[in-house]
Amino acid sequence: MSFEDKIIHHCGLKQAKLLRPARIASEKPDTGVVIENKSAYFVIRDCADITQKYLSLLCYGDYADPIAELRGKFTEREIIDFVSRSQDDENAHLRHLLYVIFTDISKKEGVPSATVTSSTGTSIDLTEDADDIYGDYDYVDEIVESEPEQLSIPSANIDITDGKLVINKLIDAFGAVREK
Image 1 (tube, one colour):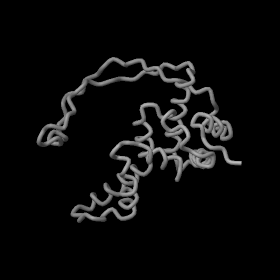
Image 2 (cartoon, rainbow, N blue to C red):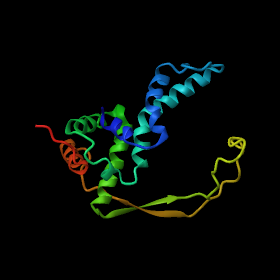
Image 3 (cartoon, rainbow, N blue to C red):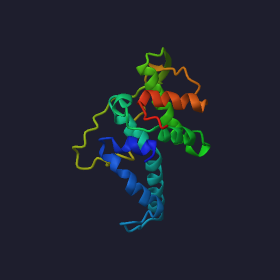
Image 4 (tube, rainbow, N blue to C red):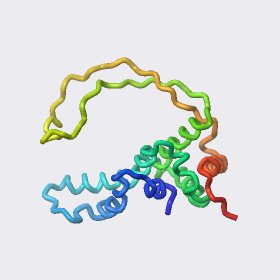
């Protein structure tokens, strides 16, 4: 199992079960359905591709304390493989996951944070109790501008391009089993 497969496997989200169907839908989008619109074929295929790439990030984000909850779940070989694949330009999604993990490691270690400006919109009720939850999908209300919000994000004190350093940090953070 790969590093990201283990993140998904140990996650409690119902969406964690999407990986296998996404692999099938990516290869053959018309599996189990009748395609009546050509664009539906491509929507299914591309959603399946996105799911395969970003499901591990979604699952990782669902853990209350991912570093602690995933501690001891990985081997040294899985971490080395993950870091190696994250360096490939074809795997930007793995780099995103790596950055999020290092943000969490920095938070846990109490690394000083950098201030980032973000804007937040107005809050709306998102409960699924209406008959047609998609009914107003094409309707656009006026856009409300809001004041930027200051967010505090830990800055990692590690060179993310130094593979050996990254590997060792991940092994230590997750308590990975070192191979002899």
